[in-house]
Length: 227
Image (cartoon, rainbow, N blue to C red; front, side, top):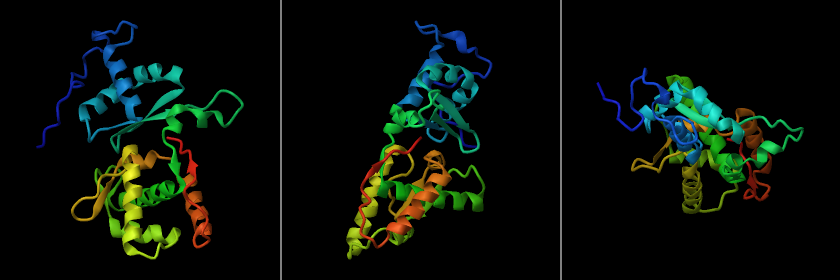
């Protein structure tokens, strides 16, 4: 049986969260976990199982720390994923959530967003076949390239088309949704893809690109994707 990696978060389930308290009065473990989540906006159990279990155990305490920042914690224990969400704005302006720093940090171009939609669809298809919670979903670059070319104008060069895909994948890596291509010409789609935007938004985006296909319209404009 494979042993779980140990980390600073490893402790007994019965250990009180109040064992170490920061100067602000917040339990030190809660404060450290909230700061860890704020670094990238998410935490995966595959990267640090002990930290993920600690987040699950201290969910209410972490939410209390995040509330003044207009953030909340969303847990997907089946996929082993903890994600920060922007809470619904109290004001009457529906655009307020879009100005939140966590949202602005997820700014993507239309072409990047198109690839997110394609990757998300590939992830969901494999989950339907293998069950929700599958830890590693792989897709071939050739498959992504053929799907991408349905929506984007052909550059006239296979090399340029492939390089466009590789560039888009490289741009998406910092968002934590896809890995570096491996020696077999495949990438790993990470569970966070299920939390980037929503199915309705991505379906509308695909429909938008179908209208744009072959029209020569620019797909480089930046848009905000709620995370």
